[in-house]
Amino acid sequence: MTHETPQNPPLAAALILLATVFIAGTTLLAKSLGTDVLGPPLHALQISQGRFVFAFIGISAAVVVLRQKIHKPHWGLHIGRSTFGWGGVTLMFASVAFIPLADATAISFLNPVIGMMLAIPFLGEKVGPWRWLAAAIALMGAMILLRPTPESFQPAALLALGAALAMGAELIFIKKLAGGEPPVQILWVNNLIGMVIASCAALAVWQMPTAAQWGALAALGALMACAQACFVNAMARADASFVAPFAYGTLVFAAIYDAVIFGVVPDWVTTLGAGIILSGAGLLAWRESVNGKRPTVTERLPRPETER
Image 1 (cartoon, rainbow, N blue to C red):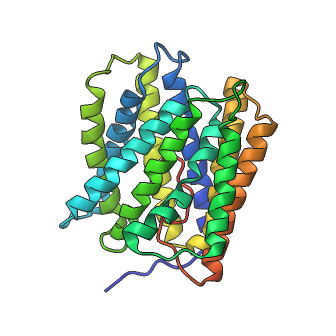
Image 2: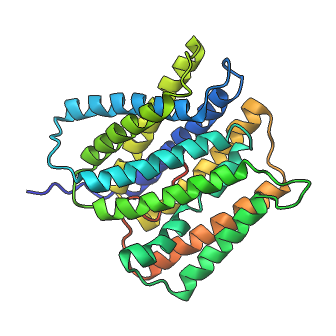
């Protein structure tokens, strides 16, 4: 007998907003770890490893408490999903050490647009003029945030763009996995594989963290695990088309954290570029709701790390 979670849109919105607080917090911690705030800067590969290790510990505890059985995961799809997810997280963490959190977060919101484009050759999906318009708008916003002039170009913004590409590719695997396995199992397997990949990649650059950095790494993993839990529970209580706009709160909280902690106030270029990207992503989500489609848990939501 299948258990249906009662629909509760207000609770779903609150859970998504809470998830955005946590996700923006992970980028703040990544920036602190990648700079000299808490000690000698850690490499993005090591920060990514800490994110997966501590998130895996937290989700494993949830698996034990919930008595979730891990039953025949599709290892091929999981490995593909986790590889791109790890790549997206690592590139995102690398970018925030050099550019404002708001810029990196806004560029990462391109991932549903990238996922839409990749769905054409890999999933055989058809894309109409409205969705192409949404993609063009979002890409224009990304070009603005790259600040493509000799005086203002931000090379590190290309890292955030790479993160969006990797996360967009991850969406293809997520769509194939959706509905085939329990959400908790998907999260557990994803973090297990991500932990293995991240640990192997971090071997060459690993250094002993300071006590403060150990605490930040543990907090980063815990925040990500909490964000994923809020996300999954929110999507069980409302349609993705309703929840999607609330997920853009990540950009707001990232900008607030950057201003309060690092004194970085978004300038007009950041505001303009982010606004255009959000307009494109919002148009894409609106067209999906008009078409009467129900997107998968993460297919149409912006994914700044994260879940990555």
